[in-house]
Image 1 (cartoon, rainbow, N blue to C red):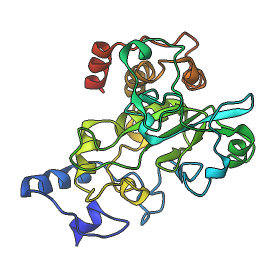
Image 2: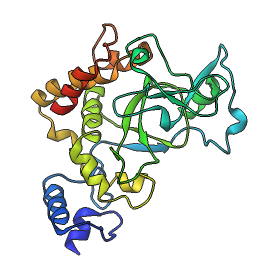
Image 3: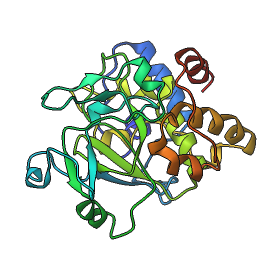
Length: 269
């Protein structure tokens, strides 16, 4: 019972491990680092998180979706268009039903932005934020599984409309700490722990809350100074994320998308 409460404090469900070694390793990690949001504890949400399942349901809100952009529209981001630290993973071509991967030459162009399948009038998006739109959005892919290359796929995306398979989160902390949280979510340890919890094809809020995640208080100033520049360079690769970069205190141009340099930074994180 103590192990259930340690690993799944909110649901008290029995974790399923592939081996005894996995179970022992998970217990060590959970003893060292608490879950993202422990609903059983006062102060169990140290990040001050709030969640929302995208902004627009892809079925029930489809009447709001436009097939071409206008002067007052915003792109509709779907989860499949993002990857880890990458808001330009895939794009649509005009008239095509399926998205394609963004190629390296496109990623290296800071003026290149993805083309969505749909657009939404900006007023509908602003309503979702009570009239105060944020400078950027943060979220992860809902659809995933425990056997793909990476299970947790999180990124920052430009202020836009978002479909319901892009699970969004906001924190009560500074953008610099949010960059640390994003780095944690895309880390190998976080990914491994998520794999122990996913039995189907979704990473829902109740599962995400019970993945071990470093609290804001875990980061020293030295840690933050190390992490933020790396997350900034990994994410700020096009002009559409200027608001995110400015919130991190950076006023320069987007960084060049360099796969080898990115691999080093991700390894260090």
